[in-house]
Length: 222
Image (cartoon, rainbow, N blue to C red; front, side, top):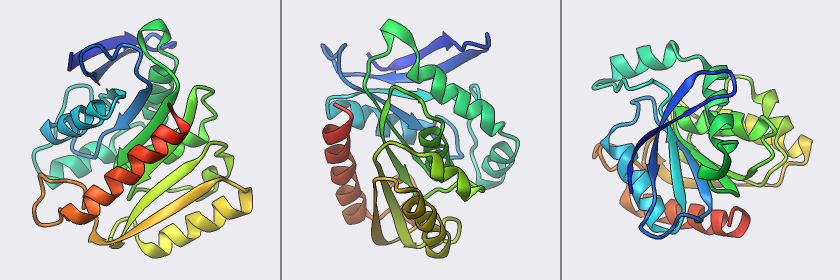
């Protein structure tokens, strides 16, 4: 039952999204998975399918509306032209999708999707129960003070984009705001979860992070 589908946002915009769900799991708890800067490519679909195999219904909003980058320059261009407030509205629309979309919800994402996971968690969406961002942060860290759901972050010690220094600043905001959170660190590079990029993929770290994420969602979003 893994396929592209569409729904209509409250503002009338059409939102395409990828839905992954194992047979007979129509009532499985929902997880929204937010893409990397590449778009909804084969790797993100595999990630969604794998998460569905853990017993969740996984929804991936198509933030680029069908476009997929094939190189870093394209990806950078597409991310720089993304309307981030509209991307958060996409997350909100899926989280309020009605009878066809299961609840409760977890929210996760990678790189750009990790930053949007933080922003989605800060958007006070009632159906969101937990968030798990991977190696991404929003530009305005003060928005993190609005988070009121449990948070589990995953970060790499060798990261040029989401640096340990930036993560430390984010952690200070979370601590000051009293957010329930845990940050996990890995001796790895940025995008260590992406098996389609062998130059940075770190299978041991990826497996451990995966197990931690699934356990967290089973605790808070099931």
